[in-house]
Length: 272
Image (cartoon, rainbow, N blue to C red; front, side, top):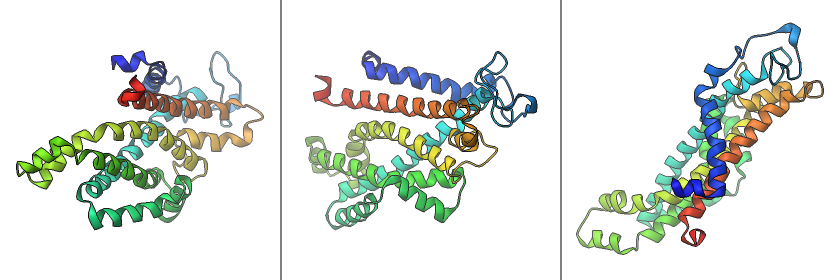
């Protein structure tokens, strides 16, 4: 952690994520208004003492909705990434450790899935499953799974021929023990780095699905949905669209910067 905070990129990412974490954990508690409360006489107002970021088309306080929506937006990105990492990591670990025909079959299937862009693949899955936050999270996790599986497999292939793995096999350890106790602990670091960067993409994909009406549904305060609801009023009060857009950008930037710093610190060449 000390080395991460000494890294300029890591420090910037940590500061941004600290702010996002406070919003995610304490947002509903520190919001000055109920995010669903209408103020008909204060529709589309600019920033003021009463409403620091102004109000939307229904007179709802934008700051309160941003603070409340942080939880659903960030947890969506984390949940989708964790599910994709768990599934993709397990597939890559099995393919790399077993090898042979099983490895070839799994990799060819994943190559076919990787040929489809993440956004298009996500839209296809959501169209089949139906809209909603749960289905959108599952769709993003499935879209991330092939790329994470390939990263896990490549890491396993570089580890399974190391001396400590060969020594465990020479001792007569079972394949399950070798995979769980020797290979897997030494493949975690690259997967964590990739997962940290993937969270930013998951947040943006979730916001995109919310904007298209395929993710979070009203009256949710998810940031992408906020942009979709306010886009036709952006010329009367641009903050309606700008505030959630900036929040999405800062959250994605924070995870990206932290992931880049972790990648540099875990790479011996980057440390030099």
